[in-house]
Amino acid sequence: MLRQWEDLNAREHRMYERNNDKDQVMTVCTVAMAHLAMWTRDHYVPDDDAHATWKRLSPFFDLPGRVTRDPATVRVELRPFNDQQLTRDLHALCERVNAQAPHLPDGRQVVVSVGVSTARNPVLHSRC
Image (cartoon, rainbow, N blue to C red; front, side):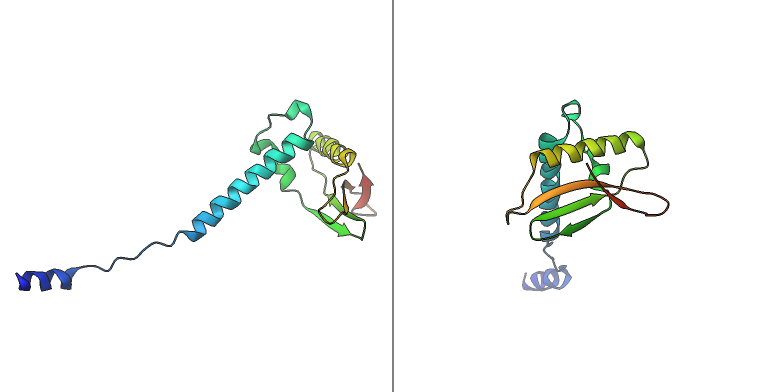
């Protein structure tokens, strides 16, 4: 019996525990992004899009832009869409955000705008 036990020990495979910490962090980040999208939709998206899905909102979160800051404000300038309807929706979103005058925890006001492209000046500042 001892011989069988030694043979069994010699053939056993080493077991490794899977580290899934990275998966847990990614799950937390995914849930946080979903909550951010829902909060943004609930507070700033016009009522006709009150039940917009992530598919509808994701282009707005993916927009490139520029952030500038000074002691009193943080300005977020977003690049307009190629689609006119989406650009109109973006202007409406900026108007709603600016009408509520959100502030950061440090007291600075957030101002959101849409950049305007022209032939002479690639991005001019246009406040919503």
